[in-house]
Image 1: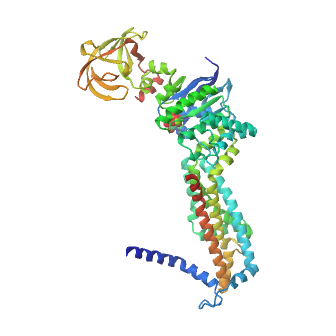
Image 2: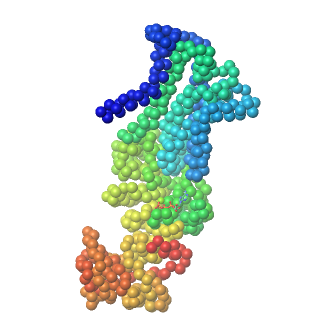
Image 3: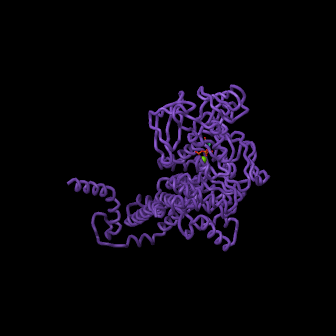
Amino acid sequence: MRNTARKIYIALIFIFLYAPIFTLMVLSFNASKTRAKWGGFTFKWYSALFQNRDIMEALVNTLLIAVISSLVATVIGTIACVSMSGMKRKTRSILLGITNIPMLNADIVTGISLMLLFISFGIRFGVGTILLSHITFNIPYVILSIMPRMKQLNPSTYEAALDLGASHTTAFFKVVFPDLLPGILSGFLMAFTMSLDDFIITHFTKGAGVDTLSTKIYTEVKKGIKPEMYALSTIIFVTVLLLLILVNMAPSGKNEKADK
Amino acid sequence: MSKELIHLSNISKSFDGQMVLDDLNLKIHENEFVTLLGPSGCGKTTTLRILGGFTSPDTGKVYFDGQDITRIPPNKRQLNTVFQKYALFTHMTIAENIAFGLKIKKKSKSYINDKIKYALKLVNLEGYENRMPDSLSGGQQQRIAIARAIVNEPKILLLDEPLGALDLKLRQEMQYELIRMKNELGITFVYVTHDQEEALTMSDTIVVMNQGYIQQIGSPESIYNEPENAFVADFIGDSNIIPAIMIEDKLVSILDTRFACVDTGFGHNKPVDVVIRPEDVELVEPDQGTIQGVVTHMIFKGVHYEMEVMANGFEWLVHSTTMFPVGKQVGIKVDPFNIQIMNKPESEDEEAAAIDI
Ligand SMILES: Nc1ncnc2c1ncn2[C@@H]1O[C@H](COP(=O)(O)OP(=O)(O)OP(=O)(O)O)[C@@H](O)[C@H]1O
Ligand SMILES: [Mg+2]
């Protein structure tokens, strides 16, 4: 009795959470143009999507921005973690707190302040400004996923490498870096997902004529909803879902190896 | 004695305004097994890290073979360290761990392979080349850490409580292995421990430290039999430390009772401390003893009985193979040779000595 109640409860939660997305997915395969009735199964919205120049351009922008911004954020975040680990505990926790604030900050605030910043420095809006903004909001996520690894490090392995004659650089890349790698990877994937996912900050920092997938969908939807947009949203959802699964698997895979 | 290899000269170091090492002087000779012994926080690791180059002293100099190496970084020093928590590289195989230093020195492949074989043989772990560090037991990891250090043929091997994490039996085995290795390799060992038994078993020279001061340097025998102050006496083994008055040469008044002793030169009616090891306290029939007392505690310890005897207001710790039951009246006798006289603390050094007791 209690068990069935529990199952129903869980089912309800899942329905509430996933029903909208599920509807969207179903509609993306609906041959009929109206949402009201089911006109049979089709892939035509998907093929229409891939023939749409604007959307393909937005896709390229999105991927480009996601790859570059997450790479740059990962490098900056890794360096930040390494330098913070050498600091006194108090300084470090203050700094960590400061880097965490942008994550809690409302996207719209971050977006508008970045926009104002670009305007006041006279920077032309375009892919460049989107890239800068994405790097900015990605760095905290990278730090967040590397820092726990950093704390687990045995500080004497670095010293042991020096002791055996390694230079500081060799000691870092041969000994510290491999231990941080799982954290760095999951930080990268997290940043990539965040960048792929972002609408609000991009919206405020993109300027006219440049679009990523999310801003493209927004402008298209304003003109009237086309079923291609269902298809596009479905693809984005599935991609992000896969990435998130990857992020969650990366560190646990490492632990399994250590347990053996 | 053989050639002097290391000279720590007037080393001082403080962290956040707290003095950790205060004007420390120490000489270490070639092929010597030197142990730094002292309670937790007395500055042993700090001393070792200054030797290894991981910490630089505030003042003072480190000489290696007559050359000032105070400012030389760790990767340029001819010594290697075995860290307290092994510090093996977990993502590398055992062979890669051992080869690490040799690869950096750009040794040939065949040389490296020979060295790996040789080192694994030396630490009794042949055939472990392709294992990962975390698949090894604590003792095995420790031996790999030693192997990784000695393939570099350092002049000096620094070991920071290398056996601290092992159980008693393994620890004893490793102690013998370390002594064997030291004799086979002919290198100098600087060993840190807070276990006095370990220090007594393994060392040629023991450096007893407390609160950043060296309390006594000497062979295990001299440290045990002739402790220079109450701290050393108390730290090295069990002992009875009793305030007394040196009446004249070779005569001391302990608990208002006169005992013959062998020390001279302390002056007349001078307050001193005496140390009597529990195994040197002889229990006899009351009329034959110098002092009379009554047994208050008795436990069987395997090799001997440990008893406490209350006599003249002092609880004497006694180790004896003959058992005296609790409540029995006994006499206490001490051979003059076994009464060790020590000056009362007066200098700053010895005040530090008195604090922890
Ligand atoms: N990096 C550091 N920063 C601040 N204080 C330190 C640092 N390293 C050591 N100390 C302090 O110096 C003192 C001596 O430390 P040290 O590690 O040399 O002790 P130890 O004799 O090795 O003790 P143990 O047996 O516990 O290892 C301690 O009070 C410790 O708190
Ligand atoms: Mg220590």
